Length: 493
Image (tube, helix red, strand yellow):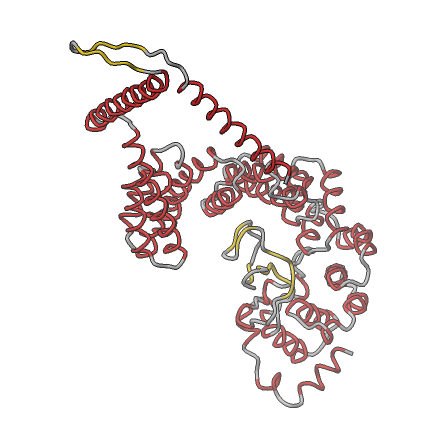
C-alpha cells in the first residue's frame, strides 16, 4: 500500500518536473541558427532536444542494422552468432525430446522405435555418449547382434562410455559362449571400476569355471576390500580356493607348497573338512604328527566326519586295533551318542574283534537310521559272531538298496558327489555333508561303505558275499522269503 502510494507520488513529481522543463524551454526566446545548403534554420531549445533524440535514434538504428548484416555474413560463414545459437537451441530441444522418447520406447520394450529415436537424437545433439547406449540396448532387444556389437565397440573408444561398452561386450561374449574373451573383458572392466559388484561377481564366476584359483582369490580380495563381502564369508571362500590351489600343487608334485596352502586353508576355516584332512595327512607325512593330531581334533570338535577319522587313523599306521581304539577314545567321548561317532566306534570294535561292544555301540541304528553303512556294519557283526549266512545276506541285501547316508550334497540342486569339490554344477562352495533328500539305490556302493578307517576285516570279510557288491545283490530266494524277517530279527537280537 505504501509502496503504491510512493510510486504515484514519484510519477506525479516526474511529470511535473518534465512539464516545468518544457514550459521553461518554450519561454526562452533565443534560438540557434543552423545553415544547411545556403539556408538558415532557427532551432529553439525544445526543437534542438527533439532533433538530438532523433539523430541518436537514427545512429543507433544504423549501428544495429550494420550488426545484423555482419551477423548474417558470419552465420553464412559458419561462425557462432545469435542466429546460430537460436537454431542450436531449437535443435537441442528437439534432440532431447527425441532422446526422452527413445528412453521411454526402450523401457516399453519397443526396440526398433528406441533405435530410431536415439539415432534422430544423435543427429540433433551430437552426443554419442547419451544415444549409443539406447541404440545398443535396442539392438539387443530386437536381436540385431551386429548393430549392438558395433555400437558397444564405439562406446569403448570413448573414455566416458568405455566401461559401459565393455560391459555390453561381456554380455555378448557370455551369450555366445566365448568365456575366455568374456574373462579378459571382465578383468579390463574391473581395472576401470574396482568397486563394481556386478563385474566382480561375473569375473569370479568365470575364473571359477576356468579353475583359475589364484585369480579368483584376487577377485575375492577385491570384493572384501570394496565391502561387498562379509569378512567371515571371505575367510571361508578364500580357504576353499587355497585348498583348490593346494590340490593342484600336490598333483604337480609340489608337496611342500601344497602342505603350506592346505595348512593356510585349515587355519582360515578349521571346519572345512577337506582342508583339515589334507593338512593333517601332509603334516603327518612330513613327520609332524603332533600338528596333524591337533588339526584333526580341532576339526572333529566342529564336525565329526568319517574322512577326519580316516586321516586320524593314518597318523599311526602300524598300531594294533586295540591301540587304535584307545587312541580314538577322546574323539569318541567328545561327541558321544552322535550317529557318526557310534558308527566309528562300531568299526573300531569290529577291527578289534570285540563284536559285543560293536553291537552295543551300533545300537538301534540299523532300525532307526538304516543306511548302507549301518546295515553293512550289522552284517559284519553277525558274521563275526558266527551268525547264519542267510541272516548276513539279508542285512547285506538291505544295505544294497538302502540310502547311502550322509554324502557331499549340493545345497543348490541336491546332487550327490562322491568327493568334495570346490566348484559344482550348483556353484561355488555349495557342498554340505548331509543325507540326500531321497535314497538312490543304484548309487549305493556297499563294497565301499565299510571304510574303513580300520582297514579290511580279514577274518570276517573273506566271504565273497561281503567283498563283492554284485554277489551281495544276488540274494537267493531264502533271503527274500516271507520267513526272512524273523531270521533277521533273531540275528539282530
